[in-house]
Amino acid sequence: MKKLLAIVVLGLLLSGNGYAKEIYLSCDSYRVVGHYKSGGVSDEPGGDDELDTTFKINTDKERIYEFNKFVNEFYERKDATWSEAYIQWKMDYGETVYFGKINRFESTFIQETIFIGGTNPRFKKLVSYYKCRVGKKKF
Image (tube, rainbow, N blue to C red; front, top):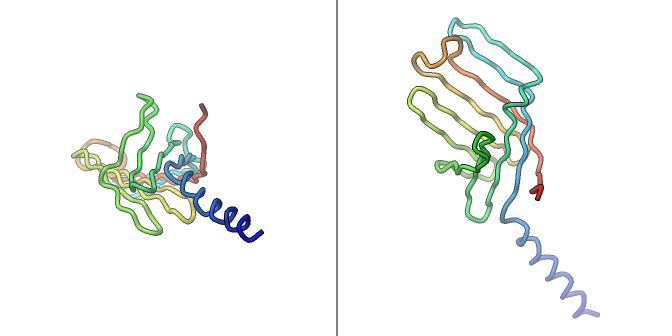
């Protein structure tokens, strides 16, 4: 009986790592805050369905990929830094800078878009808030 119990316990302990390699995280936008160049703020609860996104997270290699709907591919966020609480990254495209931050405890994602120069005539910054859930591959 002790041997059987030991086999069951070891099996449970070792099987958990087999599923931890890739996690799919589906994030739905629920709020967008725009900071106008003129100084005002636009707070739009409800978000925008077009902003919804999916991440593929490899916890073993500490790599994160974001799904691009327009080309149907995942792109790696190469400058991502990992901590116990957050995964965060920065993408600098010259006149537009994106900051992404996933809270690993609350399953939330915040993306800040900062417009430098004249790339956006109305806003200097947009902040999008997302609620995330663990998803699965559809096929």
